[in-house]
Length: 381
Ligand SMILES: [Zn+2]
Image (cartoon, rainbow, N blue to C red; front, side, top):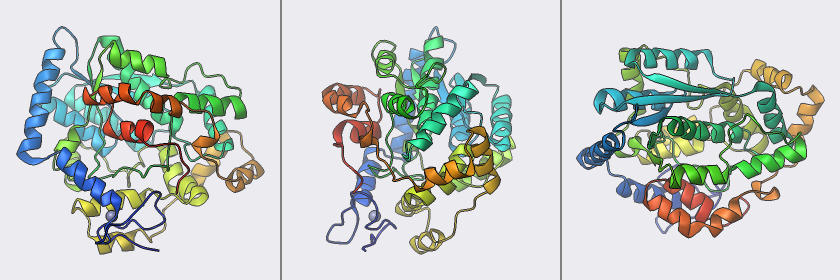
């Protein structure tokens, strides 16, 4: 067992390797991203130039940009940034998987009201969505959140398409949350559909998954681009939280990904217990690399048990109509991997030159291109 000399990743992380200084390949990847996405004055200039273009693209349209909101820290801050700092006309978009925490709902309302931003919401048809979630559990794969995540992404495109908007801002920050190692998670519409056909009734009518043809149309015909402004900022989450609390009466919900209750269930119970995946490795390593957390502190904190409210598990079992013994069967079933089910992965690999052009033109993100088009199908280690 080897641990990286710089972050806290060790030999258990998929596809890890160490250089002669004992530093891992993920730290090297971080350094390369760090120079590719500069902060400070250089980063500010990149955002300003991008905003100028966005305003041109927004002429004649009611909005310049769609920003997905969850009530979390990153998305709330992006609303402030877009509207109050850069003067953009923002349309917020929200996908409601019906598991929002009370605090998240209040945060969304408070921040949008104060900034006077309109909201586009897509509420999924409960019963159908719950059946899909149940299928994902029965398939024994770690991507329980895939239907939510794909629906989120699709909702942003739907909001853009409705008003002719050309830009989506995403709140990801590799400096504070990291990039999950390849092999941990995979998702696409075909993956969900094939699992739901095998383990459920296969009916997907109201759940807006990112179907390939539609997605390509939104990029190639409607020319909807994605931008991650936090990549170009010296983004200190702790300082931002304090700012949001003071300026917007925003409330802290107690942990990364905890604004939504299925995220909380997945990150604090299902992934660590069944799959031995703890996203804190990713988050803490990122914070250590970017100097926002001390390495010794991270090594200590990772040993702390994750809090979990078992009433939430009971609620999920009730909503998904799972008995105690059904649940036990799910937890002891052999773990499966996305390669065990039909997906678009081979299609993405085949279309790599096409997606390379989309990457260069700002339609897809670097992490999508690397994980879906470049990395070959393989099991985790
Ligand atoms: Zn490292």
